[in-house]
Amino acid sequence: MSSNETNDGIVLDVQRMMADLMHNAIGGIQKSESAVPGEEAADAVPSNIGIADIKKIVVVVQKFIDNINAMITKLEGGATQLNRNDDKFMDDYMATADNILEMAAFSARDSLTGLSNRHGFDNRIILEWNKAAREKLPVNLLLFCVDGFSYQDESLDWEYKDELLRAVSKTLGASLKRSTDFMARWSPDEFAVLLPITDVDGTMIVANRIRDDIGNLSITHTDTKITVSIGVHVHIPRKGELPAEFVSKAIYALDEAKNRGTNQIVLHQDD
Image 1 (cartoon, helix red, strand yellow):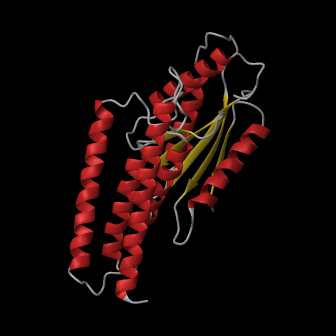
Image 2 (spheres, one colour; image 1 turned 30 degrees about the vertical axis):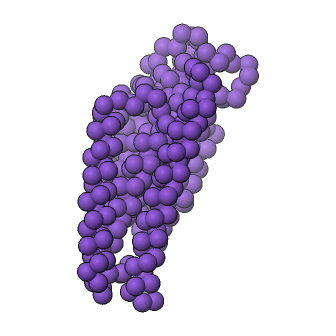
Image 3 (cartoon, helix red, strand yellow; image 1 turned 135 degrees about the vertical axis):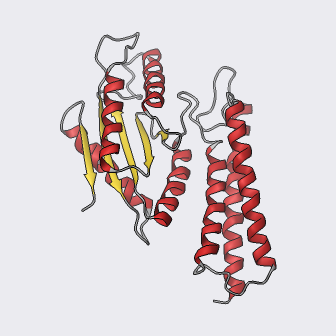
């Protein structure tokens, strides 16, 4: 493959990511506008974006513009070594892709909990996976659910279900101490936490803190103690690996935690 063909492929990759970002952002805005008053579509652009969020977006957009300009300068300069085997260029390329994913995450919030939704999680895990693979650092995933709880359970009062999920989300935010930690509503009944650059001991400390903090919750509509089951997977990405297998092992750990009973934490660690 010629250098020009490779360059064209890289540019197309970035164009596709930009198109996906714009599609999701516009789709979210349209869903917000068509939502029933007092309600909000789950994957719509959240109406409660504050000054801090706007500042973050501005910073990411500026990084994105800077990286794009650097790439364009190299392309226009006719650099013959500009290809996917050029480590320096690929670092710039991946950094630009990461900026796009960061921007996309701002339009992917769950309206009930205020956390990132599944689409936002899917974007963020690519971001963290790319960084961990480049720097040969660990990225760790916690998946957890409230024991005995199903959002689809029609026997449960909807006010209780909403209050519980909001309380768990708020507690989860307080349990995480670093700005780099990421949390999302993984499914209607489950939550996900990504912990970049964290060792096994640090990851288990966070998992136990989440379990203890949620266990201390007081929910208006029940006197039952709230417990959670948590699956943990710790991993350093290797060349050629995809995050899908990484996620599947965390799912397996969560399933094992559920099978052991309630209030359980199961760690899956690669040999």
